[in-house]
Length: 383
Image 1 (cartoon, one colour):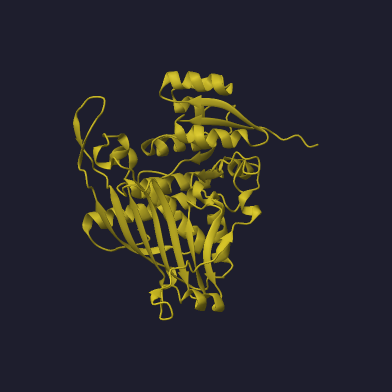
Image 2 (tube, helix red, strand yellow; image 1 turned 30 degrees about the horizontal axis):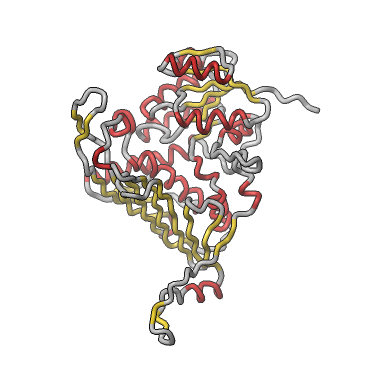
């Protein structure tokens, strides 16, 4: 048996995304060693080091990226530090897996992409919803041409609850730390999803942003602060070839929790994706099925009522797409791209893995939406 050369990983930022996705993903990968941790909180750093047997612990990311025993770095920090941590890692010749959004602005994201390309390094960005089996199936249906020419896309990714108005102030509600609101946190996933599924770039857009609660109170100090990011973002976009798209992202969808849905309509069919049903799609494909689906909601004089049956048949995601989710077969599925990143480092980059190019393209759309909302006008891309 050929011995696998270990890939040695350093992780900067030990919060929820590192604990829930990056670390489990690396531990599922053959021949991977967690060799160094970095976090600003020394108590967290010590606890995580003991839990995973990592002895090299530091509060300085520059020390971590300079270590010879680190081949690749996962950047799991707040968005405002993605650029400096990533650039420091690239300067040290390390492969980088950075969480989304790639940076606070498109120019910074472009610099990160260009630096990694020039250094010949592998990159990844945390567009983890690509791994959802239903999303994987949608990609293949669209790319096989089953929907024909794409006409319209409607993408929603929002989060709600019952306490939106009373939530305390947080760093994620400041542009300096987070770059934006739900557009940056959630919308970046949907921009990537639409680009990935359709292969079409956004060529122009018009955005509307709203901040429903402009002032919130810090829970630790009691001081009031201004919220300078949006609570909701609505974007109308032109795609290459004449297709159109609508994106909706909000923190104020009361009672919805996380709501991620996409509808795609083409000349030969359509599909409905709902992350709440991750192992299936509803799809209407082919002339006969399209004709049948078109009767949905029509008035039926025989019964004196409207038909209400769901017209789109369910298509289960094939087992091979389930296998794209690490641990799914063992009953411990984790939505993590870390194993795919390791494969890329070993020279076998999976097509499902997004890199800094995809992160940069998504960031360009986010910047255009911010500009459009601020100046209340259409913005053409590329910027």
